Image (cartoon, rainbow, N blue to C red; front, top):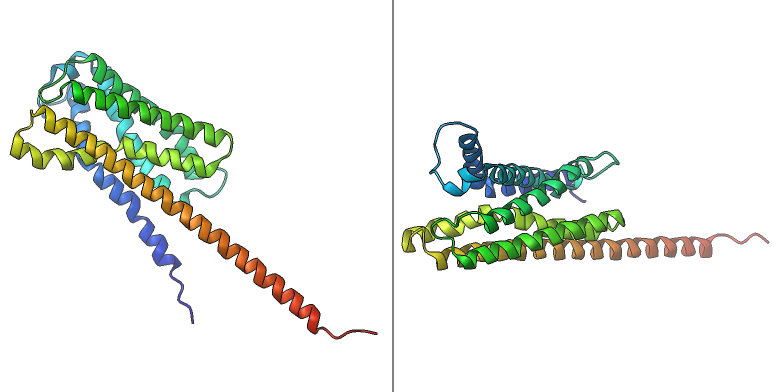
Length: 244
């Protein structure tokens, strides 16, 4: 007797986008408050000259980041990938440009705005390195989908998404350390933020490898089913009565 666990498994998969959105919760909230403030709303967030002097790239970075983190979380659901007009395909036409805007605006701010307290030259370089790698991931993902290399496309988009939502991971790295060494410690901030990007990339690689193993097992199971089917067919031919 077999028990069908498909509904339970499908229900469990919805925990993936929920978890990813919760990971991005802190930057989503703080970013939304910052955009509201830059738009003339109440001054809830601390004032920073680098934001008020160049508000456009800041707003673009925040809006693109929120779009990329929330919309991208649902791209991991297999149920939303089916069909020519699936959520996955339609959302991708928005999320890929949002990813480019997120990375480019972040690199612009790292390059041309005044560094706040705690952001030294090392962190500037780290931001530019990971921002550049995110752009490379997006370019390779676009090239793969044009060539209809769906597995490769998924791998590069997974890496890009991991980089794009690193602000959430960075919050978990920075908040505890701020109480120990202060929020303006340049060395700690550079190490913590760089480590958060690396952790996200490491998780992304584990997800990609797991997909490969699942596909390999699926192919092996398919070959085994075909072999069994062929064997049964041969056996039926062998036991069929011969007509003379």
